[in-house]
Length: 426
Image 1: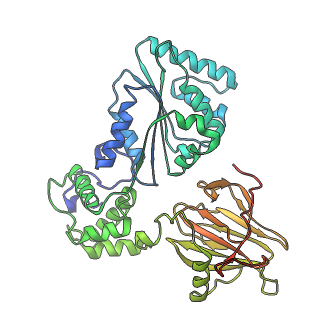
Image 2: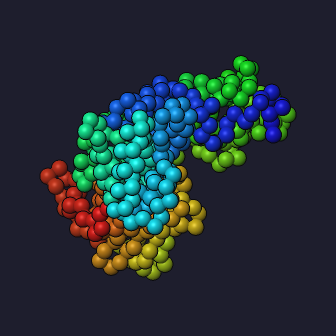
Image 3: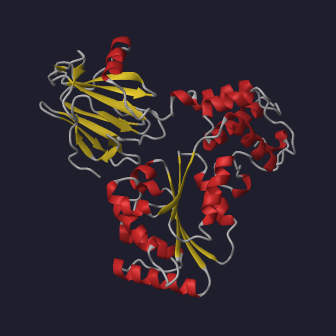
C-alpha cells in the first residue's frame, strides 16, 4: 500500500471502529460523557443517536475499551430479533447457553444473574447498537429489564444507540413508558468544516505522520464538500485520494487527487445527495412547478393504459423526478434494477412498491431497514390519497391522484381531501 510513500506506520482511514483513532469533537466528547455517566447513575436509559457513519460505533468501542474490570457488559449488535431471541442474545453475552430456554426461563435466569453480580460488587451494563431496528415488543422487554432492582437501586445500566429513526420510535405513543425512563439523550451531527480538517489531521497523526502535512491545504474544503463532515465518508474519500496520489508517486494529496477520488467513487456533492428533507414536505405548488420545468420519466407501465396518478420525487425540497402511475406495480429502491432508483444510503436495495389499481393506489414497505413514513408515522401498507407525502429515507414522494376531484377553496387554491389511513400501522 501507500504507507512507505507517506511515511506512515499504519493505515489512517480504515473503516473499522478503532478506539485509537477516535477524534473527540465537542459533541463526541459530550456523547461519551453521557455514556460514562451510566457507570454512576442507574436510573434511566442513555440514548445516543446519529446518522449513518457519524461515529456511534467507534464511540461505543472507545467507551468499552476504557471500562474498569468491575463492569460486566453485554453488547448487542443484531437487533432484528424476537423478544425471546433478544433475551437469549443478552444471556449469551453474559456467558450462558440459553437457546433451549423459553422466555420465562430466560427472564428468570437473567434476573438471577443481575442480582448475583450486584451482590458481588460488579456493575452490569447493556449496550444495544443499531437499536432503531428493535421492534416495539423488544423495546418493551428492554424497559422491563431496566426495572430489575434491589431494595436500593436498579441493577442494569442501559445504553441505546442508533440512527435518527430510534428517536422517532421512542417518541411513539406505545413506547411512552420507555421514553419517560430516558435520562439523557444526545444526537450526533456531522462535523463542521473546521472539525473535518482536524479529524483528518488527527487520524494521520495517530497513523504516524508526526505533524507532516499529507493533505495540501486546498484539499480540505473539497473533502468537506463531498462528505458533509460525515466521518465514515471522510475515511472513504481520504483513503481513495491517497491511493490516487500514490499511483502518481506523490507523497502529498492535492485537491485534484480528491476530485479524482470523488469521480472514481461516483459521488456527488454531499448537499445534493444526502441531506435530510424539510419535515414540512413539498407542496402541490412545488410539484406542479417541477412538472412544468422537468421532463417526465417514462412510466413503468405500457403506454395504452390510462394514467391514474403520478408521483413527484424530491430531495432537499426540490423535485427532480416525475413518474406517471398506470395500472400495475412499480418498485422503488437503491439499485438500478428498480423501476425508480433513489441512490441513497438511507434507501434499501428494494425499499417499497406502489401498486396502482382502477380505484386505489397502495404503497407497501418491502421489509426495508429505514421504513416508509406518512405524517411522521411508520407504515407497512398505506392507501395513498391525493396530496399525501411519503418519507423514504431522506427523500420525499408526493402522490397526486388524477382521479381525485379538485375543490377550490376561498383563496382560489386547490385543496384535497384528508389523508388516508394506514391499513397496517407498525
